[in-house]
Image 1 (cartoon, rainbow, N blue to C red):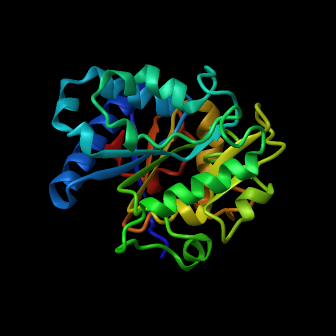
Image 2 (spheres, rainbow, N blue to C red):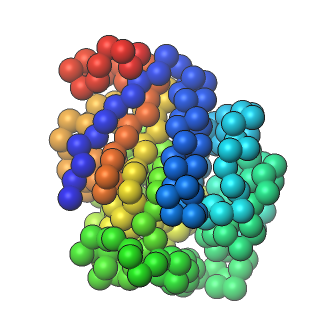
Length: 269
């Protein structure tokens, strides 16, 4: 079921990051109170890392029981462990090394020097298996996700929106965005370096309770306008990213500058 996107527009990217961090703390705490634990999918890039840095900087982070939090990733650059360009490396620097996480609950995507070597498709299949093992019996998922194996019902899945409307490593027109069965795939020949990546697919993304799309900066304005104007997901992958209960676009004023004001209330600005 598609959930209609809700928009929140902040004055600038710093305020957006701080507000998104506060919102994430609330969602995690609520999930831990109601279900005992929480599951979040992180995103890389400047907006994802900005949110993590804002989370690290706020004392409110201590409201989270970090030992009862599962962290996953929406995509990863298929590079050696510890490479500064890997999303998990950047996340550790921004936040993860500063909080008492359970290492067994930090589910990094495989590296190119890991047990699968340079076989990105095998690495993707292994991550799909890890997701399936973590999925509980109550897992809610779309029929498409079910065909490729279960995934946890993530409480929040975050995605940065690229200037070309890509989310995770699902780029316009490439095979990964057309995937309807597998939950994780290897990406070959991505238009943004590095060309080889691992990514969740749209069926896996849509298993999340809430999907948050982050966009800040003038270079994201056209992408946001296209994705929110009814474009198809093959041409504009961000248009195909939505959650089961909620789809939330978090933007700054620059990224929202090409959107019609009818899409969001003046109070958001």
